[in-house]
Image (tube, rainbow, N blue to C red):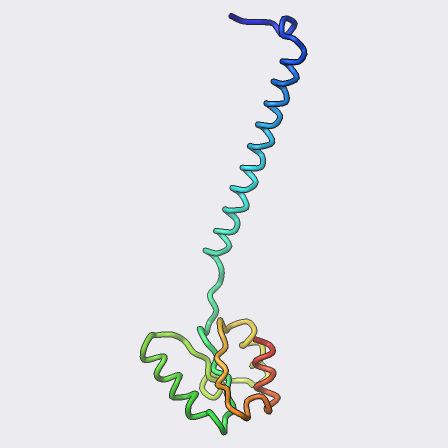
Length: 127
């Protein structure tokens, strides 16, 4: 039962073309969504892990011993890499870079003196 386009009324061919165009647009949108989902998943899979899981921000005189004890307890409980500046910092000039680029989270040991030290404020600000 083949028909020629000449035999089909004009309204039906317009409707058919509209359906085909809308179907094509829907397929393009679905392909774009699938591609973006793939890109997001790939970014999540290939994201570089940071060197340190946590950074212990503390005022040395007020919480230095507590920070060291906390690091020891946390590292014993689960093998994680925790940054404590008195243990791990080799060059003071790189402190803010390490906090910004190599630390996943910052734990501030909130003593009265913490916010009075410029270095502690810098660590919290750059984190």
